Image (cartoon, rainbow, N blue to C red; front, side):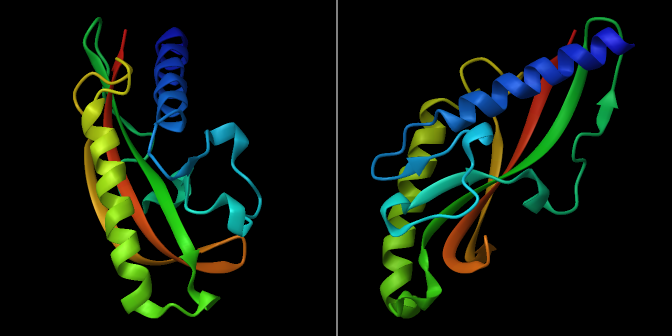
Length: 153
């Protein structure tokens, strides 16, 4: 059983690494191990992986394990921070830019929906636009709630 869990974490680590290497034009994409404690204006817009924002769901809970065909479902939040709310652009100024960034991020995900082979099936993703608090700052943002299925040997 422990070997299966180690393999699952290897698959999860690979998927997270590949998500952190996503190429989104005009966006700074941060791998999980390089997530900044705070962001400067020069780092925006930014994509950061924040699994704890995924909310309710299966988290890292396995849905089944059996010899050779185990699967692990995982929910991950990938947050696109566009600009601070305090920048004064308001919704009318912030939303059009955010929509373009959402489109660019979805295009990048669509170009590699199995994250370089790390996922057993293509990722599923829902998007929520709104305000996200990060490092004490409120940002106009989009949260991409990924649902991944990983193979567990």
